[in-house]
Image (cartoon, rainbow, N blue to C red; front, top):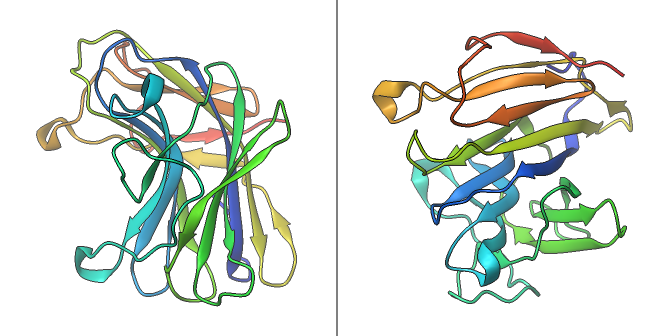
Length: 219
């Protein structure tokens, strides 16, 4: 929840996979942004059996009508040759800062990058032609294709930040919780739990936080 401000030009969030998946199903944890024309894109980490050791990074998205956004080639390899999803050897228990920012020298293009907060190394995933000169509706999520009774996993989110067109750094003081409804294929045993200056997204546990709840961020 961000207060009213000038348009956003950069957004970032810190992701830590606390409990890595134990099954060969797709797990995707991402920071999503919207574009002025109605498209959206997401940068994040994946547990994906098509990639070495099941580790990958993704920066891809869709324009109006569902078309795939055009993007630049990535310097990262990809065993299945997926332009959006690249091999990336992330590690559980390590914090990664996901960022979307303008591509230098290319108006209307946006760069998705991942910074390892332990080593300090920043990896550019690729650039996307999202269009426009600002970002809208940032959100973070877990997309899990495991069964509801598969072993529990958890990720921690923190460090939400946004840069505005007039140079201000914005940090939200709370987040709003949402879940995919069971009728749409979601699991009723997922939960969001406050954790100091961040929060956990957890699978295969009893739900304690209702959809629509507002969780204050401390620190």
